[in-house]
Image 1 (cartoon, rainbow, N blue to C red):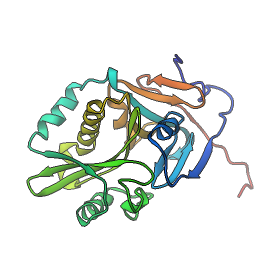
Image 2: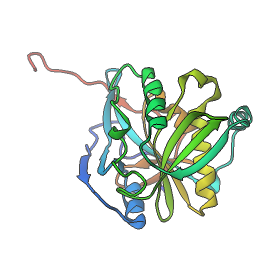
Image 3: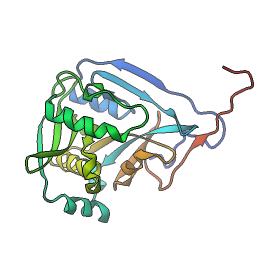
Image 4: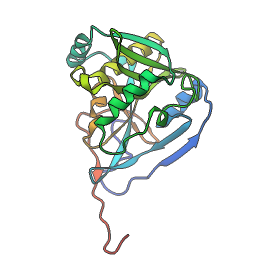
Length: 244
């Protein structure tokens, strides 16, 4: 097993990866094969890339997954579950509906950059089937929908696609709560891995994804690596004088 991220060298240049493909339909086994090599998708658009810019720095993009046999809840995650013990969780086929759209509009006010237009930026017109099987993980407080996330179902793995929650209930840590419920569902289905999308190799708003036991990062083109605590990688980009 690899023990470091050779794709992010301490010196020299990184080999860039930037790929995309339109895949209207994909089998569970082929979805697994995409996920294990760093791909993810919004609707039928599959993509993968290993670099990005965050707060002015060139940094690495790090696909994440949880090895489910190594997962157990941390103390803080158990507190999240206890805090939300009054919620009802429902697993239903993913759809487009007014309740999800209204929740999305409340959720999007959290963003100041790259603000998405709608859930259709992330889900196909028939999200339960295209490009693969997908379920919605709903969190209800009585008759009020507080959060919903969308989870792909592969042959040996599941994958988080997107999640929204009511920012008026931010103290509940609903993003972590829905991931915990997704992991619970994945284990009940007998899966080996649950993919969490991407994070960066520098501190960012995605760092909460790194706090799950059994977390692994993808060493691009090589293997999956247990994520070292505090791992960072970035490059300072210098623009030549006169460059446009």
